Length: 229
Image 1: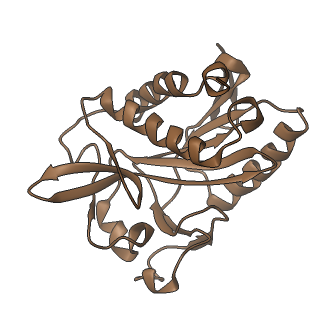
Image 2: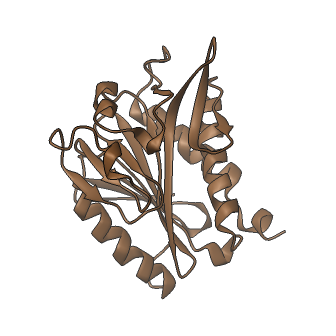
């Protein structure tokens, strides 16, 4: 892998021709949207590589295309942005790893449900590297942790958009965000369950540790050869 440092970003040319970007400073949400919009077009015209962008945002709420305004409980707490992705309201902020995934699904499997399943699998395998069991739940988007005694908490959110079979948006994993900020919304429209983080579960790991696990697990899940079989 080759590494480039540009505008407070570490850019790594990884396997399968995928460019990995890691922003060292929080990225404003409109800037992230602008980049993804441009990069999707460039991937479609084959003028830029497929990209996975690892970053954090300043504290904010985003509204997906299915968001219900009644789920925005504290609209004055943080800025609220229309995301343009699927899903409902979510929180982003420091201590949360966001991974935006811009892949050409023509090279994998032109199946959005399969793509979402693989994003879930990516998160599950990443958590497993820290001996955390993340689970899917029928009818509930994201990855969940069974806390016992009937309690289940969400640790990762998933929201995607696909244009001309190029994906964008992606996943977020709670490493150590301020969990109280989720109280300003009904996360993903689900109010009967809570939210957790890796630190809340008792793990003391760095964002760098999480990034290493994400990269390893990504290539376990996303392989053009296996997707096309």
